[in-house]
Every structure is written in structure tokens, then in C-alpha cells.
Image (cartoon, rainbow, N blue to C red):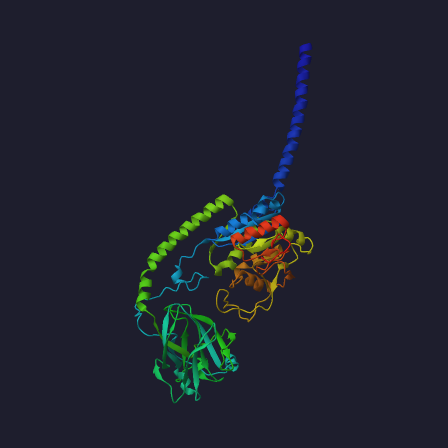
Length: 527
């Protein structure tokens, strides 16, 4: 009996514990089921955003592939200070924005030092020693009716800009024969665009029209040598408002087509027209859809045998450049492996592509971080991140305030020549834009740019491009001279541009020693 009692007690005890275990298992299963059913797996975007979500500020430093000395100077100064600072490195992230591809056009075949456009001659079937006509005009059979043109009403003198990609000798100036309908004297003048000095001038009239060749009246001029990269302007006038020539109609009332630029690559024709009411150098710029330009000239290549030698060397020059670019790419990979602070964007690394480099940085910021503020600077700039962050708390800028904080240029005229030449923006001045040395954008502005990036046109620089883009939504411009535009040093500057690696280190030493980047002695002088 006793054994039977013990056996029954054990069975009952095991049953109670089994019930408890089952209840616990059921409860645990219910909890797990609830969690599994209601779990929200993060999107890829959210996973990437979580990577650097602790950073409230993202700093993009525009840098060129070969500027490793500049980047190293920043790592040894303010960028390294951020990385090594216990608190700052959790708040601020710094990335050098570098194009992952070098230009594959040898320097001697570049249209200019700022782009990757080739001016290699299309010499197939060409006699390089022969005379050539600058602007090609092709006759067509379609008739065109004369009409009043609003562009014509505003001017009497018209000019066209061009650049010599190779040294040439100009031998003749010409005028379209449609001008034979015009009873007054007409002048063709060639100017130096930079100096606006008159170099060659020829007068045409019904009594003295010169020699006609392929619908162009030409007159010989004293031969003049124009070097490579010469910027010239050819001006024709006066042309009255109903002159058929300006409307693309020849003497036989047939339309003509103006081919621009010359397909030999010897000249680069600018995509705008100048105009004026007087015979002075025409300053006013317009972007008309004109049919052709009535002026012309004839030239010969200077020392064509040297040009032939240059063309023959093109293949070898391209091979050497390819090898150099490959070494540079490997060097960048090694640098990235060592420091991890490069953002290699999918762009050819030339000046004209800087706006696209910035766009890719903005995409990276929105995709990979929750940064509230995005700062742009260059690799030749000192930056005082402590002053920026301290002031940021006082200027009442929030991540959603549509604020642009910098030192702004207003009514800034477009350049038509040189590094900052702009041929696409159809206005004489830019909208307000911040100096490229350094400025801050709130996240909502960067988000707007990213959302619309597929339809945004890249202009000649990142600063003016951002200004044009954001003008359409009218951001809050916070103008502050401490975002310095030049190398004139002040104690309270946020950024100081145009510094060599040695200058960056010297400015940083000053700031570390006495919190004054300009100097650390009583008789302070400008840097």
C-alpha cells in the first residue's frame, strides 16, 4: 500500500508540473507568435541610416584625386581633431569627396584644364596645310518668309565668341552674300575677347564687296597669328531690324543652315551671341535660336607639320595617361583602406563635374545617416568646428528650417571665359549663393535636392548650382561673414580657404595654442 501511495503521488506531481510546463510553453508560444506576426523588418534604407545615425553633422570635403597632401594635412589638423575627439567623433562625420575615375584625355588634347572634353583633330581626309573656313554654312532648298525678329529689334551689332584650340593664322574676313541686299556699309571686326581690343577690321559695301566664295564675300587681311587658347569675338554690323541675312535668308530667299561648331575641332564656338546698338565691343549676351551668323573668316593651321606630329603621338599619350590613372586609382584604394574617410563617387574627377560630385555626396548623406546638418568645404580650407557647433545652438537653425548658413554672394555676374565660365544659365547674374569655401545646409534642403536630382541641371560650379537649384524654393538665407570667402584671416572665422598643406598646419598650431588661427602673439597680423 505504501509503495502504491508513493507511486500515485509521483504521478500526480509529474502531472501538475506537466500542466505548468504546458501553460508556460503555450504562453511563450503566444508571445513569440505575437512578436513574429507584428515584427516590422527594417528597409535597406533604414538599415543604412542606422549605420551613422548618431552623427548630427556630416561634412563633405571636395577633393581631387591627386590632392593626397591636402587630405593628409586635414587629417593632421581639424579633420583629425574631430576623429580623435571623444565626443565630436560621435556627433560629426567627415568624408573626402573624390571622383573614382581620372580623365582619359591627354592634357595636350584637352579643350580646357577644367573639363574632360577632347579637342583631338578629326584629321581623316583633311589637308592640314590648306585654308579652312571657320563657320560652315549649308544651303537648303526650303524657302523662308522674312518676319520681324525680337532679337533683331534690340541690336544692330552682333558678335560670336570662339576659342582657338590650335595656333592658326587668319588670312581673310568674310560676310555672307545676303548682305549684298543691304545698301549701307557693313563692318566685320575681330576682337580679343579678354582685352576687348580690336585686332582686325574690314569694311564691306555694294561698291567694294570683295571676292565671293560659296556664298561668302571675303577680303584679304594682313596675316595675324593667333595662339592656342586665344579667345576671340567676331562682330558684324550695323544690321537693321529687317535685314534678311540675320533671319537666315539668302539673296535667293532660301534658308541657310549655320553649322556650329566647326567639326575639325580647331575652333570651339561658344553657344551664345553678343549684341549691341553701337560699334563698341558688344557686352550684352543672349541665347537666341539663330540660323546662322553672317560673319566668317578663313584661316590656316600654324606649322601644320607639328600638328601632324601631335596627332601621331595621341595613342602613346593615351597609354601613358591610362597607366598613370591606374596607379592613382590604386593609391586611392590604399588610402581608403588606411583611413576609411574617402567617398569615391562615380564621376570623372574634373572641375566641371564638381556639382555632380556634390549631388552624390548628398545622396550618400540621406541614404546612410540621420545628420541634421550638412556642411560643404574644400580640401584647402581650415575649419573651426568648435565655433560652428557652439554658434549653431544660438542661430536657431533646426534640421527642418530650410536654412542655408554661409557667406552669400548676391547679384554676382556670370563669367563667360575661364575656369568659371557659364554658358547655360540664361541670365546676366546668379541667384544668391554661398561661398564654396564653406557653408551649412539643413537636412530638409538636402533632401529636396536629392529628391529632384534627376531633373537638376549641373552648372559650372557646385556653389552656383546649389544657389540656382534652391532659388526655386526660397530657403532661409542666414548670411554670416565668418564663413570666409577669401584667405584674409580673422580670429572668429569658421573657415579659412586657399591654404597650402604647410599653411593649414601653421593655422592649426595657432588655433591649438591660443584659439586664434591668425597668430599667437600680441602684435597679430593677418595670415
